[in-house]
Amino acid sequence: MGFLDALLGNATDAPADKVAAELAPLLVADERVERAFILFRDLVVFTSRRLILVNKQGLTGSKVEHLCIPYRSITCFSVENAGSFDMDSELKLWISGQPLPITKSFGRKVDAKALLGLLSARVLA
Image (cartoon, rainbow, N blue to C red; front, top):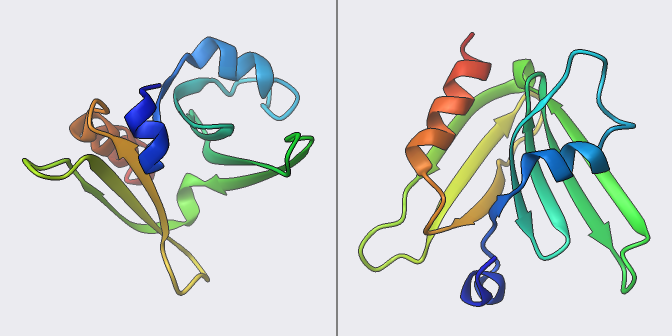
């Protein structure tokens, strides 16, 4: 993760195999981690069945919240790529029953088109 991305609060790619090992107790038998992003200690994880947002809280990070969003509950999504003067890409997810979208920022190096393709394949399938 780049230092500038960390300072700006932008997520960068995380190794899927290490994230899968960390989340192994949460994953069902046929579920696999397809893509993962890290922001300081927090994670945004795209699996074959759902989106998992991991929020490590407190000074030590021992308190952890896992928000699991099945792809079928995503009603709308948008991906904005980094422009000439923007330092980040942005993902917005509208979830059934929630009035406001969940917003996550990603670093410039994250391929916004690949992210859009992954979401399209899972949400629209």
